[in-house]
Image (cartoon, rainbow, N blue to C red):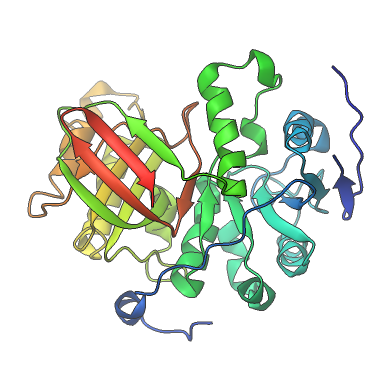
Length: 342
């Protein structure tokens, strides 16, 4: 059924500090429980911005319709329909757009339209003062890992790692069940009316065990690139989840060595490995003579925490919404893996 979309642009509306400290110091003091933004209710407004890659309003329409069907309003930022090379507008335009979303008290959540690259180019230009006083959900994955790491490590504020507008199906009713479930998990995470719960099948390469801790993570390459910056991810005492796509196996190996050598794997409570789409070498003789399991587990031989593979998060259909900065219970056993929000 065609339903009219009521649009107010940027307003376009669709109706229905921590001090700068060295990383080791921030790692030691980051022990407070994260602040969790309030759950959304029908009538609340979700702001849409393009902090990374560009996306048109036309491409967004299926997602906008779905969000409206949930009862939310959507305010489209000024970066929608903007293009500057691969970016959704110039650095200045993307900075101003995201800043306006952070500052607007009427915007209860900010959804990144798509990933790609670009958030790191302006993250240090943003003023989070209003956001700290009135926390709101920041939603997205891939390049949005910059925001998840930044607001968690600097401000102890939770966020939602999930699909973005470019991942919504054109027709929700005819989409695969797993696509429907992952999209609905965004709504459930935003509204907070029930605790989130996910499972993964048994994998013989898993390391069994149980952990209760704050969940944090995202795209492996992005996490590696943030090392040594003010947005560096803080992993001590946490459950870390990782995903990656389109990388050669040797690059994944190198990124994981970075995490190990910088101490990011040492004091974890648990490790979750999501989708890892490996890019094949043009010449088979150049392939790393290891599996993804070898590459991960050799970094963890001295640690005893639980580890699971094949978790439904990443650049894939089964990419469920995860609340970064929120406490979860991870159970890895002979029956499989369960991750439950506490």
